[in-house]
Length: 238
Ligand code: FPP
Image 1 (cartoon, helix red, strand yellow):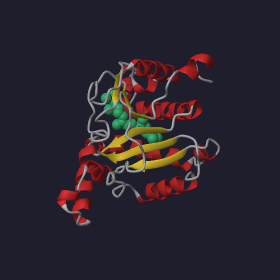
Image 2: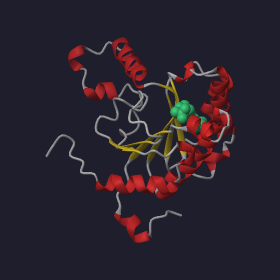
Image 3: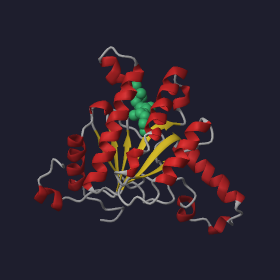
C-alpha cells in the first residue's frame, strides 16, 4: 500500500526513472558496533523492499548502484560479502516471477565469478517478458569506464567522427535501452555522484538525505517523490 492517499497519489507525477546510490551501509553497521558486512545485509533487505515498492506504485525504471568499479579496493571479505548477497538474491529467482519485475544489469560483468554470471543470465532471461518495473542493478559499474567502453566500441565500428552525435554515444552505453534517469537519490549525507550514471544524469533532479540506506523506507521514497513534484524542470529553457 502506498502511504499516499488515493487522491494524492493520482495527482502526483512519478519520475520515469529513479536511480539510487545505496550508501551508508558501513556507517549503519558501525553505529550498531556490528561488522560492515551486517550493514550490507541490511542494505540488501532495504533494496528488496524499495524495488518491490517501486513496482507496486507503477514506476517504470529503477537503477541501483550495488557495486562500483572502485569497490574492488575494499577488503576481500567485504567484497566477497557483497558478491554473496548478490548471489543469494539472484538464486531466489522467484523474486521476479511473481512480481512482474524485469531485471537487467549494467556494468562490466566480465570479471565476476562464473556462477554469478550464469545466475545473471538466468534472471535476465527468466524475467524478460515482465511488464512491470524494469530494475537495473549496477555491478562493477563506473560511469567513466562505461563512457570509455562506448568510445572504444564506436571507434571499432568505424563510425566517422563527423557522424558521431550525443545519440551515438548514448546508444553505446550500458543503458542504451532505457531513458535517462530523471531523479537521482543519494542517502547517507554524501553530496556527490561517485561515478554513477555521469552521462545519463545531465538533466536529472537530485535528492539527498542524511538517512543511512538500511534505514531508508518507502516513506522516505514518497517524501523524495513529493519533493520531485515541486521541482521546476526546464531542461535549459526558461
Ligand atoms: C555503499 O555503502 C554500499 C555498497 C558499496 C554496497 C551496496 C550493496 C548492497 C546494498 C547489497 C547488495 C545488493 C544487491 C543488489 C543484492 P558503504 O559501504 O560505502 O557505506 P559507508 O559509506 O557508510 O561505509
